Amino acid sequence: MAGTGSSRRTFIAGTGAAALSAQAAAALAAPSAAAATAPAQPAPPPPSGRRVAVLGGGVAGLTAAHELAERGYAVTVYERRALGGKARSMDVPNSARGGRRPLPAEHGFRFIPGIYHNLPDTMRRIPFAGNANGVWDNLVAPPEMMFARAGGREDLRAPIPWPGHSPAALTPEEVRRALSGILQTMVRLPPHETAYFVDRVLVFLTSCDERRTGVWENTPWWEFTRAARMSNEYQRILAVGVTRNIVATKAEEASTRTVGTLGEAFVFNVLGRGADGPPDRILNLPTNEAWIDPWEAHLRSLGVEFKVGWTVREVQYGAGRVSGVAVEGPDGARQTVTADHYVSALPVEHARRTWSAGLRAADPMLGRCDGLRTDWMTGIQFYLTERAPLVHGHLNCIDSPWSLTAIQQAEHWPARDFPADYGDGAAVDCLSVDISEWDRPGILYGKTAKQCTRDEVAREVWAQLKASLNDTGRTPLSDAKLHSWFLDPGVDGLGTPHPTNEDELLIHPVGTLHHRPSAATRVPNFFLSGDYVAVDIDLATMEGANASARAAVNSLLDRDGSTAPRCTVRPLYRAPEMEAAKRHDLWRYRLGLRNVFDVG
Image (cartoon, rainbow, N blue to C red; front, side, top):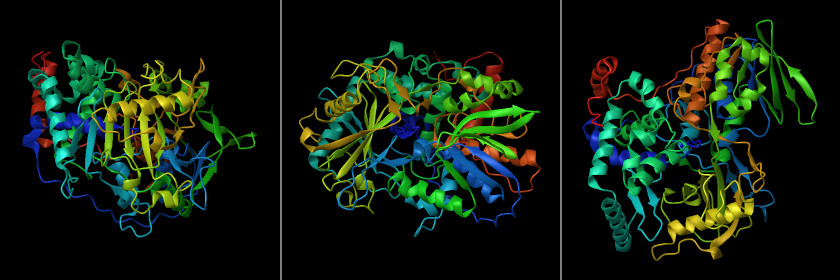
């Protein structure tokens, strides 16, 4: 929910929404699609002699470098901090003892759902020792998920349906708790509200593209779902919960087109339609070990050069082209780098600061990017001295003021003995938590996350986790089990009047779709990639970053007159059974009529 996030959070709310709406799409069920096999890789074309500067070494930048290098271009990647960007894992400083690796940390937990196709294709093409399908074989599918409720209410724990999944073993007590949680939610969520939400799902599923872009893009999810008229339970689960966890924005302003498109994709993924794999997949090692480090090694073998520690300051414009890029090296000295082509792969909040006045004047599309918005979504890891009996997968603390989601890492890393391999030997697990809401008061200090110091953020998150998980007679989390914690270093100045975050997440308020740029600009040697670029999945995700980089490379090849094969860019799945209904809706839309299922 990438996810980001998911970005990296998309499954946790998306699958919940899919479960509620699956009855509306049951007729679409079909045998699950087999995972696509890795295509045969053609021999790289001979070197073209053409040089490309890729600005940024996150998923977008590494994808662009990968595709270009395979096509014979000489590529140099400029990255200010670390390869992998927001997707990377990192070491906890000074945490290693006795020859072990440092404790593993991350900006936020990685999540690669079955609705993705472009990113998995890239992963299949990254060699990994012992894996027939490269890094892609490092993906594993958690068998279940949980909505953790506070206030003494039982948690909702559910298996994730997918062929080959083995349901987690349940004791009679766990069965009792699961049934109690389901019945409590059913009782508190009035049947007529459930029926109304299913009707809204049908409205979106059968809406034509023109209605989605012309109406639902400009309609907040809160308004589309009529949340103001509904119970608190409906608002919490289906309005606030879905938007905060899918797109890290507020239900009152989140675009229905964005929320609905992702929810639709998850419905079909759960039904086995158009899927690369299960709805929930994570890596079986820390991200750098499983993916980023092998990717870097593979790109170096293709001739890609990396300049890590180099900050892009300005993309310079002259004589109708990008004439060079001013960069600052690790020693603070500035220089201008030149190439035949330039691919900007920085996050939008950083990229737009590098676009010179002349460049912006050459393509007004760049100026419209100022209308795109970002918000905070940041991870914190808690290291435990005992395994906590929570859930074998993701959990969503749906009642937490700071919209917390989490996953325990160690059980999903079978190749690692956590205490033997990491830290000082006392920590046996990592509970990785994402904080989506930074502007709402917490339960411990009555302050927002931005108003808290780093220590206060850790204590507040820990308190909210315990409030959601320790409220039904069990104490899976206790202070005695807490070894240490690590908050993303990209956040700075917490507790001061001006906190900053180097890794904000693109969000999707109504109308912002129209600010998203294309990968090709009017400047003939300048291209854009990143999750803010207009591609089929209009969400802050690694899939969007990957797809946009492919689109940027295709545009570059076109401009260069290259005969190299173009990158495949896979769109989101469209159910053929829905196309007739969408054509009917297009007719109604052009006549100024509502969708046939839209009863108000």
